[in-house]
Length: 356
Ligand code: ATP
Image (cartoon, rainbow, N blue to C red):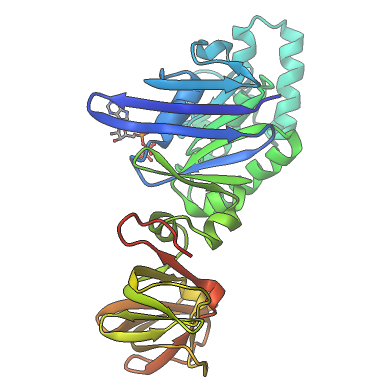
C-alpha cells in the first residue's frame, strides 16, 4: 500500500512561506499532479515527500506509517528529475542497475531486473550506449528505468518532460500514462503545464503561493473551478472574466459590466452584489438568437486551423470566443454572445472564491 498523506505540511525559507499548511491524501495507485505557476511551491512539496527537505511543520505518512523523520533512502519512493541526473561515464545498463548495485544485489539478479525494465521501456537496443549517445527522450526513459528498477511503492516526478521538444513531450506523456496503468503504482507528478495535468492526472492539486486552491479530477477543476485563480490557470485561451454588478431577477441574473447590461439567464436567488462573471471562450456562441446575450464588437479573428478565436470587446472589457472554423465573424462586426446558464461561473471579487 502506497497511500501518501500530507497532514498540515508547511515549509518556510526565512521569511518566505514556500508551502503553507497543505492537507492532501494521495490514494494508492493514484496519478496525482501538483500543478501551479513557477514559484508556487510544487517542487518544495515534492522534495519534502522525497525526504530531501525537512518540513517546517506538519506530518507525512506513506502507506499509513509516519515518515516525517525517515531518511530518503529508507522511504519506499523513487524520484525522477527534470535534469535526468544520469552518470555520464556509465552505460545505460549500468545507469539503470545503479540503485540495485548500491543495494548490493547479486550480479545475475541485477542483469535480469535491468533486462526486464529495459523491455518495459523499450530500451533493449540501447543498453550498451553512454548517455551522451542518446536523444533527450531516450535519456528520460533511462532515468525512468532507474526509478522503475527499484520497484518502489510510489514515484515522484519533477517536470520530467520539460527538456523535451513538443512532439517528444506528447509521446513520452502517453508512455508515462501507459506505464502508470501497467504498474498501478502511486505517482505524484509536478508540472506547470496544464495539458500534462489534464491528460495524465487522475486528480489535480492546484497550488497558488504555497497553498492548495483546489483538488479534483481534471473534469472537476476545469468545469467547476473553485476560484478565479483556478479558472484563469486552466484553459486556453483563458476563461473570460467580467467585473459586474449582478442581481437575480425573476429567475434570471442581470449583470452590469462596463456600462453594458448582460442578461445572463442564470437560475437562482442573488441580492444585488458585485461579482466576477466567468465564461469560457468555447461556451460563447456568436449570433445565436437568445433571450440572454452579451453585446460585443469583434476586434480581431485568429485562425488556429480547425478552430477560430475571435477577440471582442464588451464596453471596455475584452472577451474571447472560440469555436470551429469558420466562426463567421470579421473585425468590426457587432455580435450577440450567448452562453448556457450551466456554463456561467460567478466568483466573489474580494476572495476570488466561487459563488455559483
Ligand atoms: P518552479 O516551477 O519554477 O520550479 P515551484 O512551484 O516548484 O517553481 P518552488 O521551487 O517549490 O516552486 O519554490 C517555492 C518558493 O520557495 C519560491 O518563492 C522559491 O523562491 C522559494 N524557495 C525554494 N527553495 C528555496 C531555498 N532553498 N531557499 C530559499 N527560498 C527557496
